[in-house]
Amino acid sequence: MSLTGKTAIITGSNSGIGLGVARELAKAGANVVLNSFTDRDEDHALAEEISKETGTKARYIQADMSKGDECRALIEQSGACDILVNNAGIQHVAPIDQFPVDKWDAIIAINMNSAFHTTAAALPMMRQAGWGRVVNIASAHGLTASPFKAAYVAAKHGVVGMTKTVALETAQEPITCNAVCPGYVLTPLVEAQIPDTMKEYNMSREDVIKNVMLQRQPSKEFATVEQLGGTVQFLCSDAAAQITGTTISVDGGWTAL
Ligand code: NAD
Image (cartoon, rainbow, N blue to C red; front, side, top):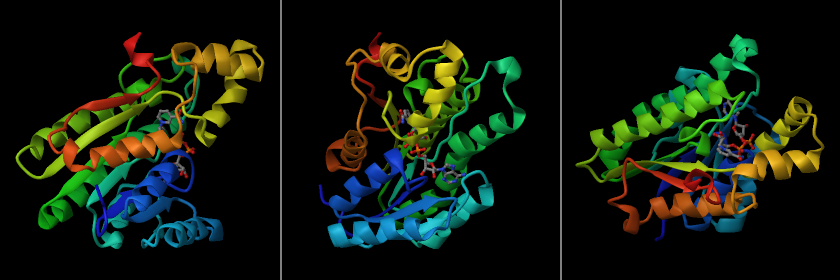
């Protein structure tokens, strides 16, 4: 389906999955709004590059997704929001009795609360436009748990719950809300977990990748940002108009175990 003329806002999209999703949606014709908390030349350059490559309008808007007012301001400043992809996320790995309170608060704010604020601000625009898609990038950890990831697992389960509620509140409108649950995707977020996990398990990098990360991913392959972008694009298509309030796993079989 062509997304020409649609505006897609992707939170946390100057890297990793968010950037991959933005590229795929722009290729399908959407005008994408990239976002992160930084305001560097390279952030704006990413938007220019996407515009050049796809002939669509891409913009970068700085907003810190740990702050509710900035989440809402991102949506307002974009001027339109047909597709909202709540993707911004961070991770911290520690046993719960040693979990730093500031990390807990930041993970809950960025990975879960931001989706509340952006969705609340975006739904009136979608209603006015008569069409809308909310896609929350949750995780296999929105459906299952792992040790040392209490805040992340709590936030992602929260996002999956919120997805169902938003779907029910919009069920009789041309708006859908779904969650995509990736397994491991090799992005900067995952790369950053490798040193801590090496220490935690006293393992080499290769062993962490094979025996810890991909241990639960039966395909033994990382998912790619392009595959995640394609999944989001499908959820924006007419074929997915009756898909709402559900989760789509892109996890190489992890949650089938
Ligand atoms: P990443 O670190 O490459 O991307 C995270 C993005 O969030 C970056 O663009 C970063 O700038 C942005 N971000 C962080 N804090 C922010 C803030 N305060 N305000 C605005 N933006 C902020 O990581 P990723 O792997 O691409 O993760 C993207 C999403 O996918 C996250 O929600 C993550 O939980 C989820 N996810 C990732 C994997 C994986 O294996 N990579 C698996 C399951 C779910």
